[in-house]
Length: 88
Image 1 (tube, one colour):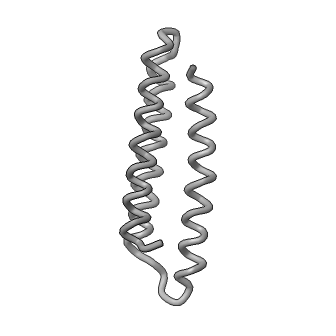
Image 2 (cartoon, one colour):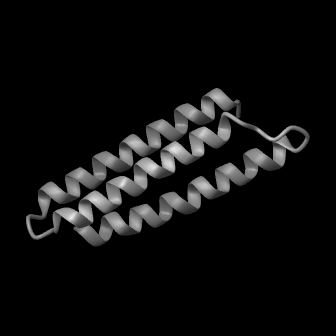
């Protein structure tokens, strides 16, 4: 996958996670606003971190670099999904 495509994927994924976070908060009125804000901040921080790291690819080990980025993206996404589920 090219760097540009991966950036688009990260931005799309984070947008969808943020939408799910907001939806979970709007459907459940018993959710604390601070919890929703913390989840939203973690989504935005993940997006900023991954996109900025993609802008500075380490030369020489690009295949390994992209593999690590994808693995970390999946791991962090799973954690955020669990936090969103906890909101509902």
